[in-house]
Image 1 (tube, helix red, strand yellow):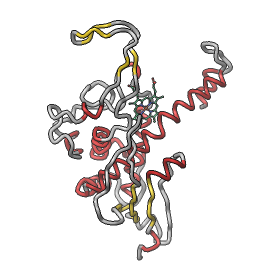
Image 2: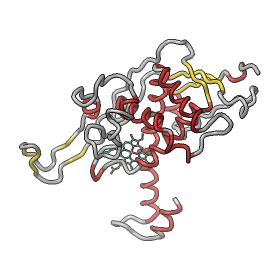
Image 3: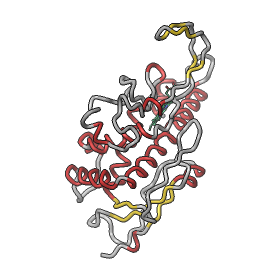
Image 4: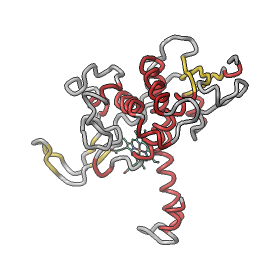
Length: 265
Ligand code: HEM
């Protein structure tokens, strides 16, 4: 906000005044950033609850690099390769924008021998690309390890067309760096601070909604209890799920059952 206020500073752009531009830019960032980040975290936690061996490995990584005497810091994130791989694997299986956004050709062109007319609309089937068995072995399985071994070279910035959850090219998501930082930091802090489990012990249902963004269609319920007892006191009742979320999304997605009061000393 500071940058926008100082850079634009009363100027007009394409006939719009500074306040309108700043308001519109802020709205776009909120619209582009909230659902995508929240949904990815919901899916990642659902996948971890269904794959507890992955959850354990993530917590081992946190214990090695962070320890149990302090909270995760931003400077820890570069060392948490397994957690980064979990986020990538979540974005592969449950991209928050499974059809990207609609694009329109601005001029006639030829792609792979096909004539494409100006005005043609392009919808990209990301799910198909991200689960192509010729690229991904066991494409429907949650295997973060693939991003540390066979697919170690695959990054997220639109240069590897087999994996483009943020899009690619000129209209690629401008929030990639912020979004990834947010996802890594939130997931790492959550897994480091809490033991998590499914309240009924059964696997988490994974149906998706149909729409531009890909939300889990059933509530995710998570039982949490503190892992860092030397930091938390047993009587603390803490909800660390502070995403800036719309009430609608909050009600439909996540209900954390806080059982901290029951933890004995
Ligand atoms: C999990 C995190 C995120 C994912 C997976 C994601 C994904 C995407 C995708 C697929 C697009 C469309 C790209 C295309 O048209 O080909 C997009 C556009 C956009 N994203 Fe993100 N995004 C994320 C986080 C964010 C954040 C945190 C912000 C801002 C703070 C943001 C702001 C935007 C904006 C403004 C656009 C529209 C860009 C344009 O139309 O040129 N995104 N994002």
